[in-house]
Amino acid sequence: MRLLYHLPLSPYSRKVRLVLAEKRLPFELRVEKVWQRRPEYLELNPAATVPTMVEDNGLVIPDSGVICEYLDEAYPDTNLLGRTIGERVEVRRLVNWFGSKFATEVMRNLLWEKTMKQMQGLGAPEAGALRAGYANIKHHLTYIGWLAEHRKWLAGANLSLADFTAAAFLSSLDFIGDVDWAAAPSAKDWYARMKSRPSFRAILADRVTGMAPPPHYSDLDF
Amino acid sequence: MRLLYHLPLSPYSRKVRLVLAEKRLPFELRVEKVWQRRPEYLELNPAATVPTMVEDNGLVIPDSGVICEYLDEAYPDTNLLGRTIGERVEVRRLVNWFGSKFATEVMRNLLWEKTMKQMQGLGAPEAGALRAGYANIKHHLTYIGWLAEHRKWLAGANLSLADFTAAAFLSSLDFIGDVDWAAAPSAKDWYARMKSRPSFRAILADRVTGMAPPPHYSDLDF
Image 1 (cartoon, each protein chain N blue to C red):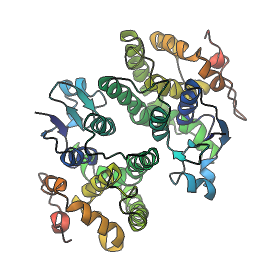
Image 2 (image 1 turned 90 degrees about the vertical axis):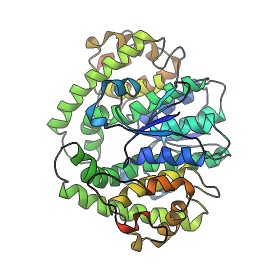
Image 3 (image 1 turned 30 degrees about the vertical axis):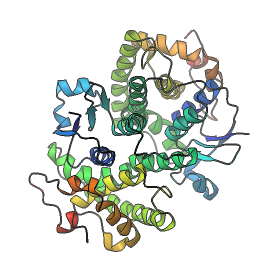
Image 4 (image 1 turned 90 degrees about the horizontal axis):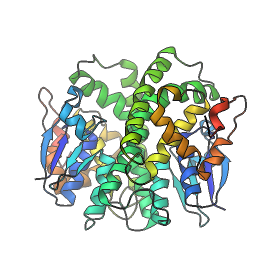
């Protein structure tokens, strides 16, 4: 069985879980506490990040970006990167927007500070980082809302990896109660559509020891 | 004429310049001081990063990662992402290794602190960052050397985007004199091969107001 090393709150792992589910590719999850730097895991992925996927034939694929490109090449039936050259540019632009800009400005300041940092015993969240994170997420929700108002899906007429990337990132933040949906109605409408997809069920069922998500986290009518 | 908005020392811009030159696609360079946040540029690339490429037909492609995927799809004759599924996984893994791990551990601490930060009037380099950057680059040069010793090119038997990414990043660091080649002979041998390619000539001719690269920067027998 295809294996995915992951962490429940890792937005990059969630993105790959969504893509695998959309493509109806079965997989087994295995939690990898990357900060323990397990030598067997470093051999699979020297960057010591999650996710890493291992295919049935033994092919090891580290890094969510590499995995998603691979999955669209190896299993093209459910196309998530876009069909025309122009579509693919816009899908990848938004995927990288979340993977770099949103990751640095929001995820690093909120999810990292409030969960990953503490799991690794690196101390309490820094007030300045949290302040920056809460300020930045507002602008990003406005941008997502703007895209959702002007297009059927975030990157255009078709559901794509851009939607799954954005939804994966927001779902991790929503688990820790850091998304103010009331202030972002258009982003909320789009997220409600994403959340009701069957591929999202496993994400909404995630639970983490010692942490309780807010009641609306798994509620489809939030 | 195809247009590339860039900054001379941006490793991401250099990567795209190398790929365009390898594919023999003519282009014109235009410097974009991204920190000025020029509204016309933000319309092309709301992330306000370089590079952004504008094709003759008007297609706007921001982000070096998106540009390189686009170029291999639109102009496949000189293949740089690998031909087999396995090759493509390893090429993209290394491309992302430089774009995330090397970028955070080395580029951010050295190139950003010593050049970009000052260009933008954000103050002098931080001693702690420089210390971390110099410590980290040693490990990365060892890794590059290890790859170069065990394989013909960094990702395997074929010259690929992994080589051009690594060479672009190192060329920017070499411009500011931060690569201790004497301590990394295998990485140096590989870099000498990259440096002697015709696609590298324009990079080696780059000059920046107020900064002088070390004499070995453009010397092919360094």
